[in-house]
Image (cartoon, chains in turn green, brown):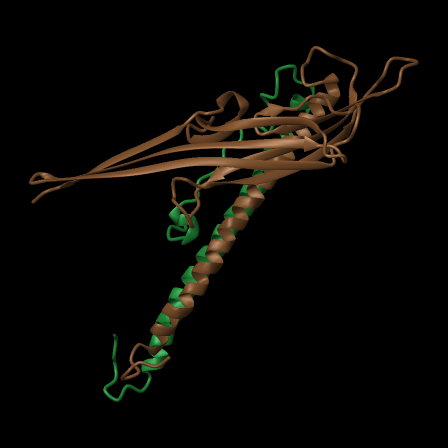
Length: 86
Length: 221
């Protein structure tokens, strides 16, 4: 464990500061995953709406059903905990 | 909670309450999964209902349009952390769509159609006769898992294999308990349009066994 003062005053503050960073990273990662999921729902809905005429009037059996051209995007490490902001 | 010397108190508390954060993450992921399935089934039910309504039936040969009600029931096979991981379990998701899209011939009335699509299979037209009052589903699973470990001076080879046979029977009953339509479907795997392995249920795959196998080696020193 990290101890910076001999009389240990401020040790709790130091640990809370460390723990706080870890908690913020965890919660921030969860929030980013949540944003990613919402984005998936919306982008799939857009793909679905864009194929509505073709799907309703198409003569082939269900091939254009839910917008088969849509592919879910991957959740990357950089999306969960952004490092590269360029 | 207190440890001797009080050093590391805050980090210890983080370790304890960190499990709560993991719990929340787990709940969030299962919520994602359910919402994702629900959205997909709702989309599929409306699209299929739209096409049936447009063509007056599940095939494109009949024309004229019908007032259509379609219920889609999907069993999604997923890993189950509480039992054997590879055995998994199926979660049921359903959605119903009604589409009024019909232009009948002059002097004729609009037709109607009621279908149930259970996984891969579409029911008969249930618009005539009694209406569906109850849906009963039962499932039977056979699962077998083997682990073979071979230790030699050159290294350790571990082979794990599993066989899974899962059958789901769905019955549509009227209010008197009479069977209107039923289907038994077996679990199978296929490669989806995204190139990934997917699970499905279909009556043409009854009694199929899903076999999975994996071998890995550890080099000796």
